[in-house]
Structure formats: structure tokens, C-alpha cells
Amino acid sequence: MPKYVCVIIDRNGQKIKQKIEGPSTDAVSSMLKTKGNYLVSIKEETIFDKDIEFFGNGVLPSKQIAVFARQFSMLLKAGVSVSGALDILRDQLDDKRARKITEMTYQEVLKGLSLSAAMKATKRLPDLFVNMVEAGETGGFLDDVMERMATYYEKDNKIVAKVKNAMIYPCVVLVVTLVVVYILITQVVPQFVTMFDTMGVELPWTTKTLIALSEFFNKWWWLVFLILGSGIFALFKYVSTPRGRLQKDTILMNIPLLKSILLKSIVARFTRTLSIMVRTGVPMLKAIEFSAKVVNNKVVERGLMKVADEVAAGKSLSAPIQNMKLFPKMVISLVKTGEETGALDEMMDKCADFYDDEVANLSERLTTLLEPLIIIILAGTVGFIVMSVLQPMFTMYNTLSF
Image (tube, rainbow, N blue to C red; front, top):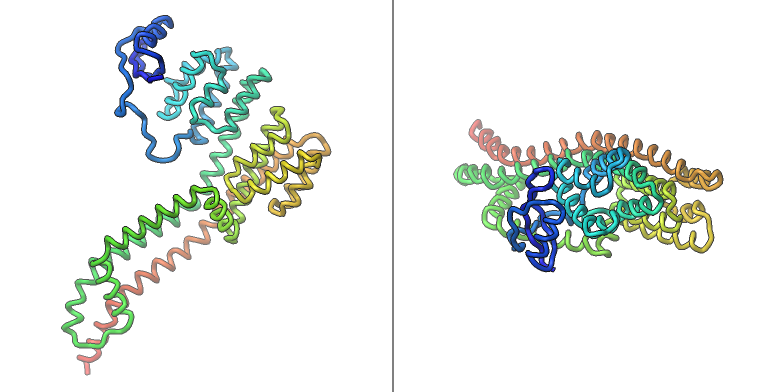
């Protein structure tokens, strides 16, 4: 069915712009008017009205999901209906994407869909969140599920932010270094080439190399950028394929210090997801499968899917996890204790908190180690260029002094 862009004034007197699917303008107009809305304008959606996602796949980030779930939980506990809560949140949320997704969910709920089905129809919310909402609807504890999911995504966003922050400084310094070196080679060095030609001294190999690089970049800069751009594009395309993701994750898991941070963050995410799903009453097999999908690492995901197969065959959870030979012994011990005491959700939650702190500490340590290393590389690169320029001048001055 076609989609129509409608501008309405709702029962509260607020002017709202929304998109609604319908067989015709008359059908959409009638539907809006029966709900007490005053229709200002309506037109069929064109290409200029479509919302284009330039980056990512349009899925709402963890931070905004946490805000949405927290406020939704508070409204439900205050006695507001699902549709009423969505109606309030679609105007109240600060993030534009969150408002848009809430509006889409609200329109689907008005059509008679359940909240989980409406969320799934938007294709903008994680499967884990949608499935937990469905479990909450089925069990009659949607407000509790929303509160737990808010806590889950708050902690998930916190740990992801710490890892990203640890990598921001090295990346910024690397970019600045490349820009500085490019400017020195293409703009500064050519100023000295004419002077070197008139000096009549033998140039050292460092200066010859620098001049050759300068001439190459000044002549073929477009080719360098074309090759780099094409290479980066091809790399991203390859990494987006299943085989590429597996190879990327395999390489990352073999880099010493980075491996430790990645593994601990994976453990934190896996155990927290497993904890909340077990606590909500999701069957163990389904909980393992969903937890495997959210770790965002193909190597670990493959291992966890094998764990799910062994659990389906009747084995306990701790033994297959131990056979993976990826997770620390502490995780295996806590899983075993949780199974024996019937408090697996509590044990996994404590495990997740512990490894969240471990990731934070390792991230700070990584930044501390990288700072002097990057400064040395930057100083060495710039120093090489400066010395390559000054060395012939020192040779000339020594010759003249004699």
C-alpha cells in the first residue's frame, strides 16, 4: 500500500506530522478523523519525503533504547496504557531517531498489533529487545521487563563507550600525524629542492628518499587517494560478509592486549544477556542462542552455537562452555555454581559486573600504554623529515667553513 504524509492537529491541540499507510487518501483521512484528529494536509509520499540513512542500518543505539525503556517502564507503572505511553514518548524523547521509531511503533499499535509485533515491524529495534518485550507481554510483567532492559542497555552502552574512548586518542593522533606528514612532504619539502640543486653538495640517502616521496605525492596524489579509498571501501565490503567478519574477528582475537579487552567485553555482554533472559523465564536453549548473537564476534558466536547444540542434547551449560576454551575459568565456575544452586541469573549478573570493571581498567591501561608509543612514532616521523632537510645544509656549512 502507498504511504501518505499527513499533518494533523491531535486531541491535545498539538500539530503533528506523520506517515501512514493506506489504500487511498480518503481512507487515511477517515481513519484519522475517527480518532478525533483534525487533518491539515495529506499527500502521497515522494522520494523527497523518505528518510535516508546515510550511515548504519537505522537501528536505534543502546543509549537511546535505554532512555526509551526507562521512561516506558515508568509510564506503565504509573498506570498509563501501552498506546498512551507511546503517544507521550513520541513527542517527549529528545533523540530524533527515537521519536521517529516510537511514532512508527505507535501507528502499528493503533492498527491493532501487539507492542512486540509493532516494534518488530519497524525493523529499527534489536531482536533481543523485541523478544524480551514479547516475553513481558505474554507473562504480564511488561513494566518489569522494560526496567530490566533499560538497565541492560545502560550498562551495555557504558562498556561500549569505554572501549571506544580508549581508541579515540590513538586514532586522532594517527590522523593528525598523517596530515602533518602529508603537508610537510607536499608543501614544505619542495621549497628546499631548488636550494639543494644550487648547493652542489652530495645529498644523503634520507634527503633523496624524501625528495622522491615529495615528487611522487605531488604528481600522483590523486592515485594514492584513489587506491586508499578503493582499498578501504573493498575492506569494509569484505568485512560485512560472513566470511570477512569471521576473518576479522579471528585476527582481532589474536592481538595480545586487544584480545584481552575484547574477550572480557564479550563475556560481560554474554553473561548479562543470559542473566536477563533466564530471569525473565526464557528457555535456556533460546537464551543461549540469543546471547550468542549479541556478542558481536563470529568466533565466539560459533562456539556458543555449538554450546547450544550440546545443551539441546541434554548436557549442562558449564561443560560445553569449558570445552570452548575461550572463556576464563571464573566464568565457568560461576556458571556451574549458578546451575547447582538454581541462581544462574544472579551469578551471571555478578559476572557481568565484574568484567565490566575489568574492561574499564584494561581500556585505561591501553590508553596509557599507547600515549608514549604514539608520541615516539610522531616525533620519529617528523624528526626524520626535519633531519633530511637540515642534513644537506649542515654539510654545506661545514664545506664553506673549510
